[in-house]
Amino acid sequence: MKIKSICCIGAGYVGGPTMAVIALKCRHLKVTVVDVDSNRIDNWNDANFDNLPIYEPGLAEVVKETRGRNLFFSTDIDEAISESEMIFVAVNTPTKTYGEGKGEAADLKFVELCARKIAEVATSDKIVVEKSTLPVRTAESIQKILDTSKSSVHFEVLSNPEFLAEGTAIQDLFKSDRVLIGGQQTESGKNAISSLVDIYSNWIPIDKIYTTNVWSSELSKLVSNAFLAQRISSINSISSICEATGADINEVSTAVGMDSRIGNKFLKSSVGFGGSCFQKDILNLCYIAKSLDLHEVAEYWRQVIKINDYQKYRFAKKIISSLFSTVSDKKITLLGWAFKKDTNDSRESAAIYIADYLIDNGAKISVYDPMVSEQRMLEDLNSLNTRSYEDNKKALSISKNPVQACKNSYAIAVITEWDEFKFYDWQQIFNDVIKPAKVFDGRNILDKNMLQEIGFEVYSIGK
Ligand code: NAD
Ligand code: UGA
Picture 1 (cartoon, rainbow, N blue to C red):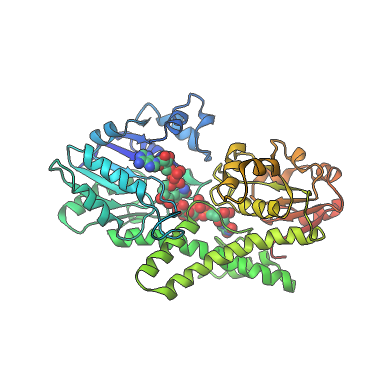
Picture 2: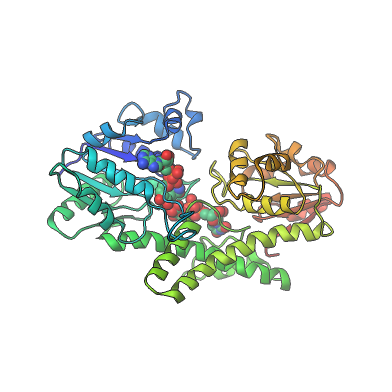
């Protein structure tokens, strides 16, 4: 079946960019992105393309070209479902905070709500595509809900996980390493798979589109994230050995990565990985393993998260011990709050945990980030429930000017690898900080020799 109209439920970091790129590459398709969050939809429809709800290099240009042509953002979910032949579900699937599986399992309530909505509204056959990251066998539950529909329509469920990384989403979507599509191996399942292959093959070479059964596709997404996160925890675990022995983590990383069997990507040591997915997806994998009575498997993957937590606190503790083991009432500046550069997303960013730990020890935290809003930072800190909103507000000061943010600081810590940090006038910053001046480079992006010549004491991860 040649599809003419698709929609996506969920206008977030995945739904927005993915649909924008599909609209760009498939002029013949009408693409509608819907969300319950009317604020978000208003921002997607903002006349000023710099005010889109998501910051992603190249995204504004794609939206500029497609919005109003064949890309539409709306809150009318029923209408979008009714008139689409294919419905992508790209809603959030956070870790459960209460009930069975609390702290580990993915919370599928939004996915379930979408399935119920589709079952309620649909009056013609639909292909429902899982775009969200989901535990293996979720398609079975979705199918069961869809089949409660009162109308006698046929629903086919596909799994089509997304592999884009924030900050490079548009490039990743333009040139995906692979597009994965899982479907049932029945005739209608195979037809549905080929309808989705038809869409992607407008710009993705056919040999990069890999079709599998539904369960392999669902599980491969969790496993891909677990493997990526494992590499970061592996290199981060070695960074502490480097610090204790005089080996240099950048040199070790380069040397190890030169083996083509290992490869040089995803081996940058850091303050620890953040983002909305790695931790959530590994926890979910642990939960699945436990549910299958595979406790050793769960424990194996849990260790990846333990090392990540260890890395964040090791960094925060390093700051405290260097300040004569007390940060009480001392101003400490964090450069960067986002979980990585080129995004305004700060979900699970190391910055949140490092700030929280330092505040617990009495520090006053000053933050500069070029993209994350003040409101977002406060909400992030509040989400940990460590102290009252007022106390967080008192402890956190946010500046739109990096030099101002660093003024009178006892220590400056680089948390996010924003390029602009490399090009600051560090001499000017040095003049205005409390001496001895200290920089903690949590991303190993600054020129250590230059900073030391100016007079800074520099701590870099793994050196
Ligand atoms: P997000 O929080 O940015 O966006 C999800 C959107 O869904 C929100 O705007 C929310 O309002 C909306 N929503 C929730 N329930 C809804 C409902 N019932 N009806 C309509 N809208 C609803 O999340 P995200 O980062 O885009 O992630 C979405 C999924 O994609 C997750 O499962 C995630 O694991 C996966 N994923 C994310 C990334 C990433 O880089 N962020 C990459 C690959 C996969
Ligand atoms: C990650 C995956 O890379 C995507 O393929 C996947 O689709 C996505 O998760 C998802 O499922 O949400 P993302 O979290 O957006 O993408 O960003 P990454 O580039 O993977 O970075 C994650 C974290 O690891 C960041 O905090 C980053 O700074 C850190 N990192 C990354 C390192 O510390 N070292 C590295 O070498 C690479």
